[in-house]
Every structure is written in structure tokens, then in C-alpha cells.
Length: 69
Image (tube, rainbow, N blue to C red; front, side, top):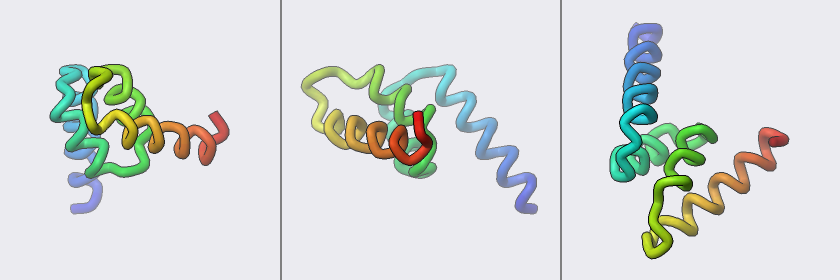
């Protein structure tokens, strides 16, 4: 059962990344929490006036430090 959940989560992740919709990226980033690729994709697409921008910047910076990127 766990394997199926992981497969479905990865399929959803890939679909959201391919689509690039900001709302879906934000929801997925919040759900997955530590997925640098998803947070970076969100950061690239957020408009400058979006109130979530500081959250995305902070999370990307922290994850890059943690992952040594």
C-alpha cells in the first residue's frame, strides 16, 4: 500500500511540475514540505507582488543550505 501511495504522489508531483500552475505548485510544496524542486518551480513562477514570495524564498534558501546546493 505504501508503494502505491508513493507512486501516486510522484505522478501527482510530475503532473503539477509539468503544468506549472502557481496555485497547484503552492499546495504541493506545502504538502511535500522538503521538495526543493517543487519550491524552486514555485519561486520561479510567483509574481513579485504575491504575498507567498517571501515564504518561497526562505524555504528555497533553507533547503539549498541543507542539501548543500
